[in-house]
Image (cartoon, rainbow, N blue to C red; front, side, top):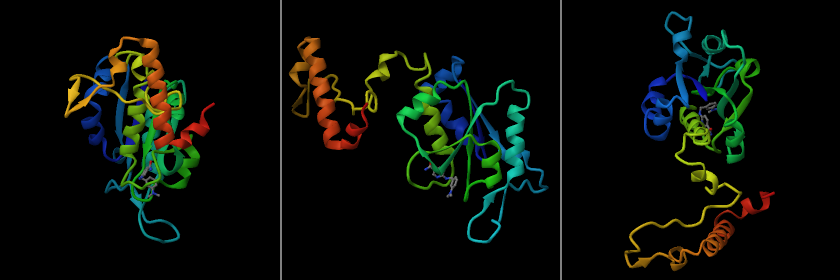
Length: 228
Ligand SMILES: CN(C)c1cccc(CNc2ccc(C(N)=O)cn2)c1
């Protein structure tokens, strides 16, 4: 899977995306992440990428030309038109269902805004979807883009060591995950539930389902309504 990120701060991606699982997936060529610096495409003599908003008001708006030309540099010799996602507070809030859907794509372009966002004509001209990672405002779309890359990449085959690593994960089968334990058996006077040491797999499954339901009821009853 290929991600092209249109950003004013490509170095943020180079630092974060070479680490851990995503970094290994890049080495294995399962995932490709390219950060394109929008500023490189500004035709302004001072490499300006933002300007004052028409109609006045505070803040600055990212100008359309550098973004459009950066976009063209990606798609100009591509047979397919990749899906363009704009990370913004105005977007539909990301959830695991959307993550699963996006993990089926071969190539995604992520547009990271700054200041008050991008000129509306860019959204009309190249953006296919606006996605938010939650109802709060950040200084830029880079962290939301990394959240999207991370959540989508872990569902790409062979990125995670084993399929079942994410089968029962939270927000899978619509419930929160059951409590997890590992060695030692006793820690700070707290022991591991004996059922987990019984080797009785049917009973362990039962206990885990029970715990998932109990936790979801306590922490996220809203998830119970959505379950199909
Ligand atoms: C109107 N405005 C301030 C704005 C518009 C577009 C981009 C940005 C960049 N900041 C972002 C981006 C995404 C998210 C999110 N919740 O996904 C939060 N902040 C800000």
